[in-house]
Structures are given as C-alpha cells and as structure tokens.
Image 1: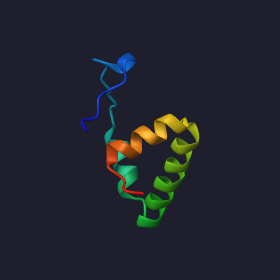
Image 2 (image 1 turned 90 degrees about the horizontal axis):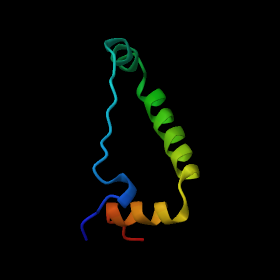
Image 3 (image 1 turned 180 degrees about the vertical axis):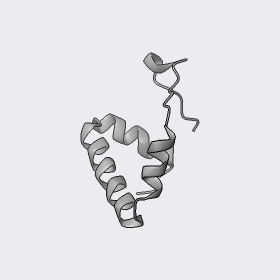
Image 4 (image 1 turned 180 degrees about the horizontal axis):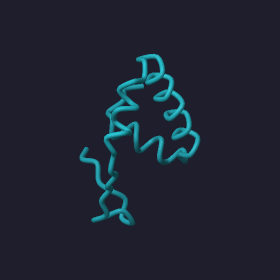
Length: 65
C-alpha cells in the first residue's frame, strides 16, 4: 500500500527555518530532556488526531498490532 496525501493537502509543501541559536540550544539539552520533549510532543499530537488519522498513521507505518 502506497501512502497518498489527503486530497486537500495535495501539492502543498511544508517549510520551517531553524536558526543557529535554536540549533545551539538543542545541542545543550541532555538526552533525558530531549526524550521528555519527544514524549510530550507525541502525546500532544495523539490528542489532536482523530481516530481516522491515527488509523491512517498506523497503516503508513506498517504497524502489526
């Protein structure tokens, strides 16, 4: 199965610029701080997703539950 973008997102890209200051601040973080940030962000995204979006993500990642 090939993952296809949602119709409303077709031909829309994503761009984000990171400053050198942001990179330097990230490098100063401990592994524990980085993992805590990842966990918090993951929970936040999960709460925003609809059940249909969660299912689509599982299929895209080829989860075998």
